[in-house]
Length: 113
Length: 113
Image (cartoon, rainbow over all chains, first blue to last red; front, side):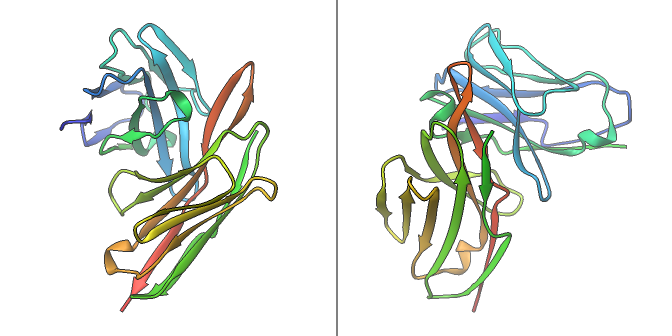
């Protein structure tokens, strides 16, 4: 049971570099989302998608792009990395929409120097 | 918007009972979740409450009072492996016909021998 798979698990970037965090799920979930988790801040929603071809912004979308060309994949792109984007990123999916039980990937720890 | 409050840290003894409280303010309440997150790992689903009352699942129980904007997670017969952060998440109306899931900052529980 793969569930939600995120890659890479760790990444170090220099300020201004771009990169893509990959997320794939094999549960045929329509809803997928990206969160960032920072100490003392809790999980904050970056972007989400309710189905292929549909994406929307969450609480902290600036500096990030997403696309949803298939049900399975939901990549998160950092356009020009900044130190403020140093965080742990989680991809999550749900079979019951945005208010259903979330299944999380293992997380991607990103450091921007 | 939504406001969620839970204690930052708690300590309890192995074999004891601990109650982790969560208070919230939201419009259009649509459900409350509890997740467990071990250090360095992804959150995992524990419980869901949408109606008032107690939901029991093994050693874990979750209670909800919608009128008071209050929930608690009760952990019985504490084990060392229960040392983790416990996240309260509330689903509420965010406008434009949509609902949003908002996470609290989490309560770090330390179980001591």
